[in-house]
Image (tube, rainbow, N blue to C red):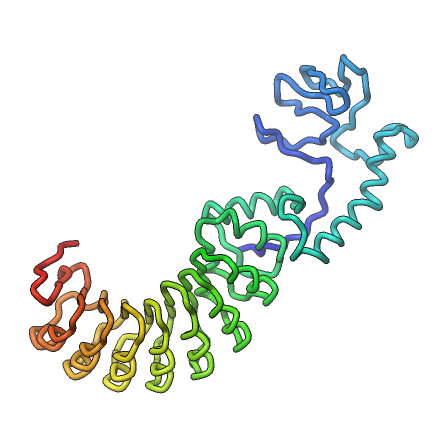
Length: 328
């Protein structure tokens, strides 16, 4: 997978034709289109001619615009001045003040622009979040901030990501420290993240401060009771993905969860004693998506839960407290 910051030297006068997708210089029309516009006078002309019949002005060829034409020609001088002085300064200022630069004025190469548009459509995903310009440009254009393939994220980019209320997916991060966790806790949308292994009490305490609707912890294959007690302080929906066994000690801590829902999408082994403990949870819903056919003893233990218990789709979803049966 590619990264968001892909430096590529590209002429500022290169554009892509909206009709056929052909790349061409602004001062030159697209040779594959029937009708072309002159950038000097706005007149229309046809064919592959590089001169406009309205103003009879010269237009640059494709191969090497720097070396063609009279050096004293005004369009040629303007291009050389822009290429040598204006463009480097603009690029430097754009990167230097990326946090304050208007997103509508960001300049990306055609390759970068194509990659960003693919990120919006969801067909591609960056492996590194380090270009603040690209992050700021993507945030208002993506329905869901899905960066599931990102293995690293710079703190300057993370500060802007957590300001949005959109769902944030960072399920492939190799590492994030306590300061990054404090930034993630400021996010107000649904947060899908893979915590560091092993998950410490300090990190769990900061994650529990997340005030979004859902906190989803991915690939958490082991959970200590002390860490579970910290996560129980979370006030939204808590999803623990990757845990295959819900032990009695962890259930005793998670039953004190302050949120409305507990989700265990990967728990396949649940003892009757652990089920009796988690049934004391004061929330509204319990999800055990990986348990398709619960035993009668397990159902009896969970029947003491005041809210709704839902199991996997293959065995149907069973609702307790006399609410009957809900199909898929």
